[in-house]
Image (cartoon, one colour):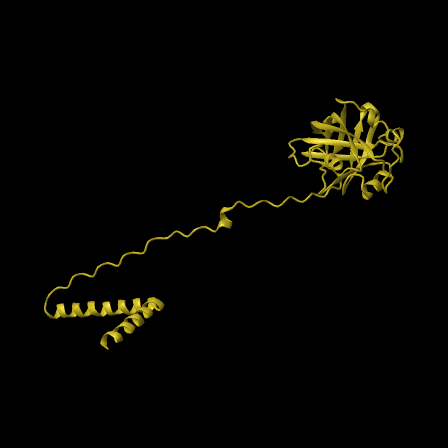
Length: 257
């Protein structure tokens, strides 16, 4: 009978230790302190010097881990487009164009706001999330104007040759661009439009490293000659002729004369 009672008692004691280990440890520690204190008192009463208490082991120094979010480098938010309000003046001596007003607006090439600007007989320069920078800035300075209507300021743009100079007067400076290539844009191709508006003309997604310009006008005579009479809701033909250039020089307006 004694054996049968001892087994449940041991099991029960084990359960107390497992389920309340912290409490058991605390009680054991307290008992040890009482025993040590008692031994010390007895030793003092007998005139026997007690051994100095053992120093408590110091807790190891733990360096907290930095949160992962602090270690990761933050990605800067894209910079918002700066509002542009100043009208620039575009001159192309080789085709007889002198100081065509170019009005900046937030939008994209040949959209309704840009078309309304062009209908006044001046150039339009879009900027914003769909592309476009200011004169002399790194990226693609976009300029569009009519070729046949509203006085046809860019009627002779298709004859502009590579190597020709284009001058933009803005912000107290004169920027000289050199034409480097001719491109054709299709209004019926999103890819083609993306190439026209890209920061590096013809290369969507590529990071620009220099200031460039795209001057664009309609290819209505060419489309009509090919039997292509497609028009969008703003009367634009399918194709546009783009002259692309690279900035060669920027000088103060006074020095340019």
